[in-house]
Length: 210
Image (cartoon, rainbow, N blue to C red; front, top):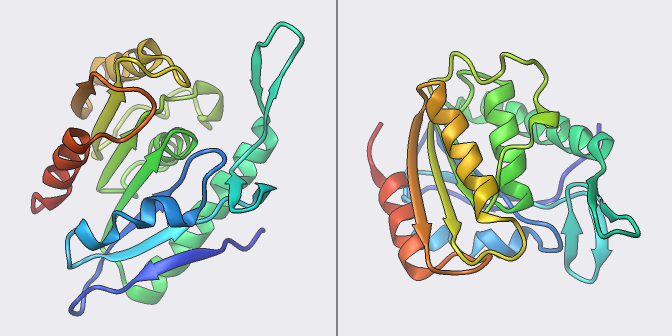
């Protein structure tokens, strides 16, 4: 099992809540960790770094390949290894800190993994904030993985996203709603980014006591 590097911010008081941040392709653990000062003060905050190095301060959770027709293919073996590594990391911290409330936040590739983690492990996560991503069904362990979910989902996407099509996010939203999952959907007139309005809505979602 691979070891993951991470950044950590402690809560202001004793807490059994945590949020795990999962960055996008070509980014690093420093990216989403910029949100840490604005997140609820009663969280342990972990920002994880992808295990595959692309360049200086550039990391990924799995490789993305393009063929001669510019069709994109994901390295699913690497993706599954990363899913297992993230889950193992979370399980270790859960036991160490006696966590009873665990949230996930992922952007782009990190969103894809966050959704797969939550659906593969029903009841493990309280809330998932999926930013500018979608659900890759090939990463689900079982056909019925979407069933029996109690997790609350925050899904946001930019209408002008040129990296991950807006329609992919819509399809994810519709699939989760079809299975009567708790989904808060937000769309913005932006590209592949987290806008100010997106960030405000995200903080509101995470600040609600559950």
